[in-house]
Length: 411
Image (tube, rainbow, N blue to C red; front, side, top):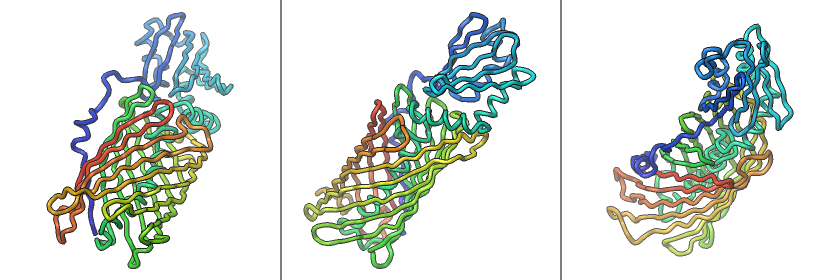
């Protein structure tokens, strides 16, 4: 069994760790008795907690529990309104674009605010279903779907990556190596999405095994991701299980097909988000040798995913999405004349485009350009089996872009 351990020490030095000027995820224009203040937040509970009497007096010294309050909020790119009428404890919440209005009445404004928080945390399923559809449609930083750092995008990319890695290991004289491998490949990425800065920390864990005939293999992968969006944290985990079939192999072409099922979960107390995504699809990787030192692979994938409710911490935000995803690309691999400790360097360059259909998302497609260079040590009992450095540049519509780097070794 080969154990791959990848590190990313140069990533932070190359990419940096954050933006100079942070951008608020939630903003509010709050008016009390004719006085207006602009306020920014990076956590959704802080938005609601603003309307506690103590917090209101910090900004409006003359505020009392009978003051009239009107607030226009940008709730992750969805305009909403929160208000208290003068001499009233009822909190009124509106989403004007959807014609939605809710009223929360307690004995005090504090109790009304708590009822509002309960609704955001999952008590009002209809409200959350409508709000989450607006989030994936309007927000460039939703953790669930609609942008390259979201869980849905990561699940789609993982499907083709796991097949490509397994297929490449059968090329260039590597077929006689161990039939099983376990890999850990840490990555660091920096993305800018409509003025927001995102740091992405990704740890793909994968196991693959070719059965005795080398005509069928098992792939299990489980990427773990942490995203820091202007100090608001979200985390996700997804698991894929696939069977890789070698459909044909001759001098002109080697073709692999892999049906795969995947399930993933993401959650964030800061965003007020929790969702489950499940589905699967079929990936294809057709390798065409150009000569003994290089080949080109055509990559295709179709998959279908659905979201469902999931409780993470205090939040169950009720995402209800259905999307069909296509990913198509090409990869060029070449054995260089240079060697390291007698082992040839192998360079790879890949381009892929991913398209999303179904429920409307902020970004409907993304382009990924990636490259890497490294070597596989073919000497028996060598301590280092593989060393590789690489990058991925991603560009999606609506000006979403990012750069991810990785470096590491195999032993």
